[in-house]
Amino acid sequence: MRGVGSVRGRSDMVSRALARDRLGVPAVLCFVLAGVAPLTVAAGVIPTAYATTGLIGIPAAFLAVAVVLGVFAAGYVAMARHVTSAGAFYAFVSAGLGRAAGVAAALVALLSYSFLQVGLYGALGPAAEAEAAAHLGIHAAWWAWALLAWAVVAVLGQQRVEITGRVLGVLLTAEVGVILAEAVAGLATPAGGRLSFATLSPGDLAEHGLGTFGVLAVVAVLGFVGFEQAPVLGEEARSPRRTIPAATYVALGLIAVVYAGASWAMAAHAGAGDVVGAAAKDGPGLLFGLGGGPLPALAQLLFLTSLFAAALAFHNVVWRYAFALAREGLLPAPLGRTGASSVPRAASLAQSATGLAVIVFFAATGQPPMARLFFWLGTSGGFGVMLLLLATSVSVAAFFGKDPRGENAWRRVVAPLLAAAALAGIVVLAIRNYAILLGVPPGDPAAWAFPAAYAAVAVAGLAWGLALRIRRPAVYAAVGLGPGAVAARLGAASQQVPR
Image (cartoon, rainbow, N blue to C red; front, side, top):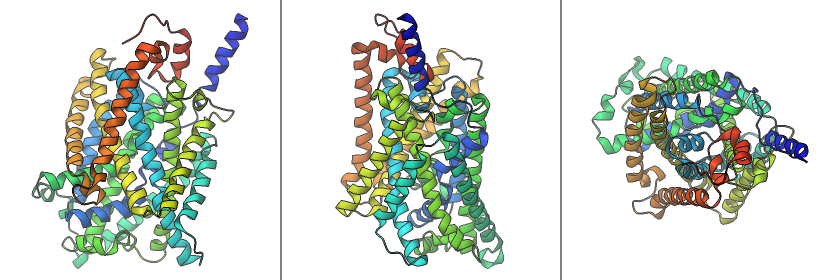
C-alpha cells in the first residue's frame, strides 16, 4: 500500500507541474510584450493622453516612468532568482511580507489581470466591427466579433505554451515593426521642416504642477503594465535565472523606446503647439497618419491583432495565477491540475467562462463597450497592477532583509525602497485623480468603487490567510511555495505552523 501511495503522490505532483524548459528569452519576451500591447497604447493611450492632459512632454514622461520601473526591476528580478512561481506577485509577497499578505496579493492579482483580460474584448469587438463594415461589407454587432475573438483565445488557451508563444511572436513582430515605421515616417516629416526635441525635455512636466504630472505619470505606468509578467513564466523558462532578467530588461527598454519614439513622432509631425488639438480631433489617426502608402491600413489591421495578442497573453497570466493558487489549496483542486499538454485546462476554461459571461452581460445590458468594458476595466486593472508593484517592492526589501542571499545592497535595499517610494506617490495621485482617469465627473460612484473593490479584496484575502493559519495549517504551510507546494502539503506537520 505504501508503494501505491508513493506512486499516487508522484503522479499528483506531476499533474500539478507546468511544462519545464520550453520557453527561451524570445518566447518569454513575446508573452511579456503581447501583454503590454504596444500598438494599442501607441494608437489609443498616447493620443488620449495628449488630448486630455494638454501636455506635450509625454515622451519625457514615458522615459521618466521607464527609469522608475527600471529601478523596480532591479530588486524584482533579483528576487525572481530565488523565488519561482506561476503566481509571481503572490509568491513574492508571501516570501517577503508573510503568507496572509500573500493571499491578499493573490486575490488582487486575479482581479487585476481578469479586468485587463476581459476588458480587451470591449475594444476588440468595436474595432473589428468597424473594419469589417468598411472593408468587407459585413455588418455585425460588436459583441459578435468579441465572441469570435473570445472563441479563438479559448482554443489557443488550451494549447501547449510554446504554440501560444509562436502565435504571439508573429503578431508582435509585425506590430512593433509598424509602430517603428510610423514613428520614423513622422520624424522624417516634421512640421515646419525642422525636427524639435522639446517634447523630450522634462521641463514641460515640471512646470504644470504635481497634480497634472501625477495623472500623466499614472497613464504612463498603465502603458507599461505587462512588462512585469516574465517571472510568471519562470517555471516554464529555460535557465530562468538568465531568461527572466533578460526578458524583463529587454522588454522594458524596448517599450520605453517605442512609446517615447511614437509619441515624439506624433508631436514632431503635427507640431508641438498643435499636437494636443490634433490628438483630440484624430484619436488613433494621429499615429496611423504618420506614414503613407499601405502603412496606415496595415497599422489599423495590426491594431486588431494587438488587442487580440494582449487578450491571449493576459488569458495565460490569469490561468497561471489560478493554477498557482489551486495547486496550493486556495482554489478548487481541479484548477491546479495539468493534462498531457502541461496546461491546466480547467483553469484556462474557467477564465474563458469569465470572459464569456462579461461579454454577454455587456451585450445584454447595452452598455458602451469602449467606455465601460475596455476603458474602465482596463484602467482599473492597470491600477491593481500598480498596487501589486508597490507591495512587491516592499516585499523584496523585507525578503532580502532576512537573508541577503548573495545580492548586493542596490538590489536588496536601495532599489526596492526607491521604487516603493515612487510607486506609492503614483498610487496616491491615481486615487486622488481616479475620476479623471476614468473620464467621469468628480463624485461619480465609479471613481471610488474600483479602489474600494481592491481594498475589500485585499482585506478579505488577509482575513482568509489568517483563518487558514488557524484552521488549515497544512494549506497555510504551502502558501507561496510554487512548485514545492504539493510536497509541502503532503509532508507538513500540522502541529507546527510557520509564520
